[in-house]
Image (cartoon, rainbow, N blue to C red):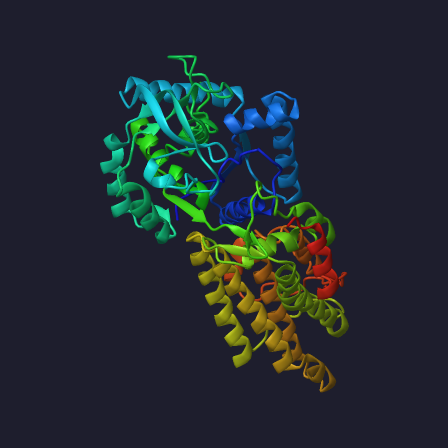
Length: 526
């Protein structure tokens, strides 16, 4: 594991307010950032908004405001939502900020001076919602955008182009030699078969038909095409192209820093094909991984702002708490696969994992320690085969969790922790503490309590990147001091002798499935 970690979300297009699809990507990145910090890795986490382009200009005009006023309002709502979701980003980059505008102009100028960009004329099909140019073959006879399925229109204008063929050999070499450069692997095959093998055209990188964008210094009637502008944020946010580039040197320029971009499937080709080419032209290293997460649908229909079939996380957070929302997004579907949001899945996952498996274990254990040992965690003495089995499973769980998380397999890592919690609940039923107490078998009863506390605290530490509000409550309930809260204690077994335990309200009250599905359906836009 490298000693530094730089992770980015895509910068979201503020053409409408954020929904749970945006929240999914941001929460997953937040979990990975928190995990790395938990392991002592110096971490920098970036998110933001991509605020230029023809669509923004048109929407602002329709609303009777300036483009800047339009994006200011929506960007503020993104920032507010990330606060509600307890996102721990280190920076929020906006492409209208001076620091980005000036630096990205230098990016264009450097590529232009390097003969990577030339002036020509664009004639082809353009999708305004996706800010994408397409060929005749790609749009087909129906002239529909391959990404969003909406109609495209003909554009003819003077434009600058980036020479993609110049850097295609280096890109193919990276894709061939680094199997984890593009994940999941199916995305690499998609890029090859859909975009590269049919023939990669030079990329249009400027526009003259609108003016809401970064002006090109060499020819101010042109504004930078949104993708060169937007993609550059990953380095401009670190100070690339400015007088203060210490963060850039600390993270991007350091070979001991792991760089991970997490993006949605709908924008993967720009990150997988063109962004590496831009970086190569700038003489910079490539990211270690471009991870393409799946898309969410709502009751079987692909979720999108344009369709209006979206779910806002805010009422969910208000009613169920932020941890329930974060848990559903992280646990319900494998990171990298498409997922489905339904009211039933949300309520059932909350009950099954949080109320029953985790919350009930915490409540039962704390109650028994208060009842049987006056709230003091007993010492593990002469453990039996049952205790030894839990110890072995705990070690295996920690190892599996770390391997999965380091490989970005978040849901698999959480599943492993769930198996430890299952085992702890089963251990209660098999050990029958109430019988041990009645028969006066105090040492055996003490062993059960010590092992249960260890299982709960270990699981809580592993789940803390997800359960950001519940984890501190569990630490307090089981009397952990600051040293005991440190991650490295997961490698020890039952070190909590003498801790004072208290009873608290249930972490996750059990939901009435019928009532809650009706509520969630009422706030969903179909």
